[in-house]
Length: 323
Image 1: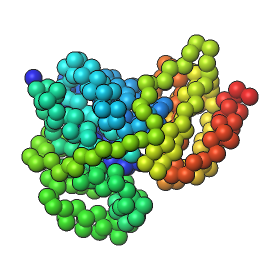
Image 2 (image 1 turned 180 degrees about the horizontal axis):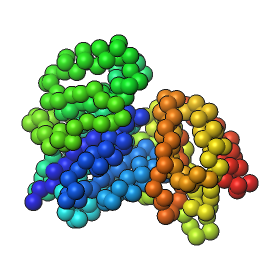
Image 3 (image 1 turned 60 degrees about the vertical axis):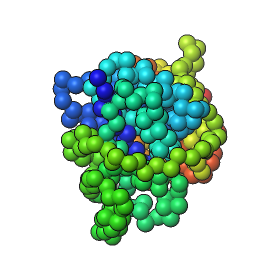
Image 4 (image 1 turned 180 degrees about the vertical axis):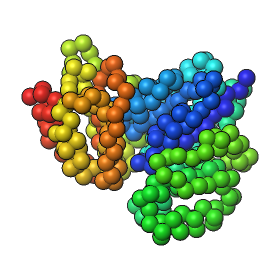
């Protein structure tokens, strides 16, 4: 039996994980889904968030999941398929090459196991007027290979942004099979069942990243914190993994993170007000309560400039009471 499979792609901060969380809430109660998550950073934030949704999740952290001949990806997909899920969702990093993921899924290895459905790309319409994104190879590629395009964060857009999105999407050739403007990553659950276009529009190319993908990090019995950095595609990341014994003051942590000038901040943190999910993108701060993880706290900061990581590391250690 073939497993229906969707790629949900989109650039950094477009709302992929939120959209997947919404889909998981709306999926049929009798279906078991699996999710493969790839992240640019090496800490694994999205996997930690999705792990509390009662589904099977595997992570490929530390870069584009199609690197290293796709070995980590193919191994992870094979493992997930062994659980016989009713659907497989794949979330590539927003800084990765989604075209090569398509190639892996359409390979001989998976042709008798995967029913590849429509690829869904999320885009912030505001970025369609920004040369920083329009000149980015990955941004262009993610939108080109998509069968379905969701213009997300419409609540933050101007009427000009909406017009730009509508003009762009109607000019696509071949045309997209579906598009919609939404907020908070909410789109109709049924679109995951759309079949993909018969002829893929991918131009697969070779590429390289600064580092190879890492295995998911695990704290040793005597460790309270691990820090890892990554870089590639013109972006830099620094992430921290804290022991579950570490508790941050809620007010101090949120204040510090809100003041950072980074393009993307994401985390699941244990605080004086319980575990919280932190999501900061382009200055918009979202703090929500999270189910209490049993293992650790995780934080990832990504920016197009290399930030003073040592200084931030010291501040986090102070907030954690480790100095």
